[in-house]
Amino acid sequence: MRKTMIAVATLLASVSAAAAGAETTAQMIQPLLPEITAWRRDLHQHPELSNREFRTSKIVAAELKKLGLDVRTGIAHTGVVGILKGGKPGPKLAIRADMDALPVTEEVDLPFASKVKGEYLGKQVGVMHACGHDAHTAMTLGIAEAMSKIRKDLPGEVMFIFQPAEEGAPAGEEGGAPLMVKDGVFRNFTPDAVFGMHVVSALPVGTAAVRAGGMMASSDTFRITVHGRQSHGATPWKGIDPIVTAAEIVTSAQTIVSRQLDINKDPAVVTFGIFNGGQRFNIVPDKVELQGTIRAFDPQMRKQALASLKNMAEHVAAANGATVDTEIPMPGSNPVNTNAPALTARVRASLEKALGKDHVSEAQRWTASEDFPWLALSVPAPSVYFFVGATKAGEDPATAPTNHSPRFFLDEGALPVGAEAMLQASLDYLGYVAP
Image 1 (cartoon, rainbow, N blue to C red):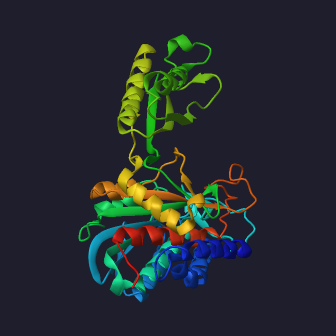
Image 2: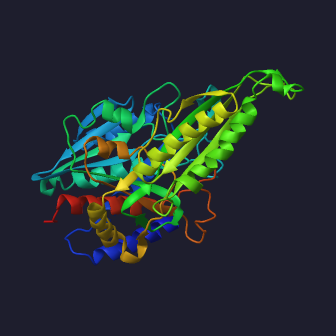
Image 3: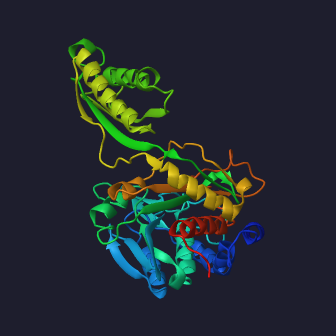
């Protein structure tokens, strides 16, 4: 692992050394790499669930204060922001990193593997940084430190946002980017742009990927409760069967994407993940509960899919003599993660400058979702979000354990790649010129 990290760092340093500038971003990050790595390993060994990032936020706040940043804590429960004011006039940029871990028991053999237990949905569970947020936090702290060393020559201002609960707040709680907005994260700082990044198993270490437009899908969770009338299984005509009705809703809903949405334009997904009803084989129950998710890359297609599902559920139920209660969508939706085209072109040029053109690719659209878009939409400001490869050299990213897997493995060679890429994009956006 360490050899891979050093090899990637050396590659990046040699590539960046050819670029213009008195000090390259590789040269700015390399001295900080041991510290970035130590932060990442410490956070990985001590993961915390959403809205419970108490230790993590204390570490982040303390490190930002050491750098002389203006620090605010307690935003969205455990969120932390630090503002770095440059010595020259310029734009305002926000850089976001997420901090929370997942209710996953780690199965990776590491000396700093997580042994932490936590409570999730009333049960004791393992806790793991199975999505790589430990790396995001560590890299962003490193970027803040690198920028703080050049603050007198830095144009503009930078807000470093360390966000809790990206994976979703616990039941009955608010959290994440929407709550940061609600709590006034931008009350006294209006960014001209917002940047974010994510390590992914789908790319090899040493690479990054970005695309203009819809990068990650919107996500909407729904609940449909079908009400029938209980009867004995031997005499179903005496009742109204919510199981049959719910099954017909599930089947009919498959036509939303295949027959109602223009998939020439963009893809969309309607998935049912919960079908819950009945207690005994020979009793028709009173009700059945369905839950699922809708994903889309186009706001109008998203709106159409939600409306179609509601309409279909109500009419299928009526045709069977049943009724439905619908929550379409439920709270906690995320918008499409859309990269502003003009700004994306600028960021891609920066990534290519930092990593080399051959190490930057056009990202594939991903039907996973993020709450990152809430930040930029609240201002509003253009935003760009890019991916950083995390799968070790020699392993096929297509078969590597994915983010959220208990076997998710982040090659630490991703740390200098992500830190340098984000630093380069940020300095270029701010208009920094090395003295």
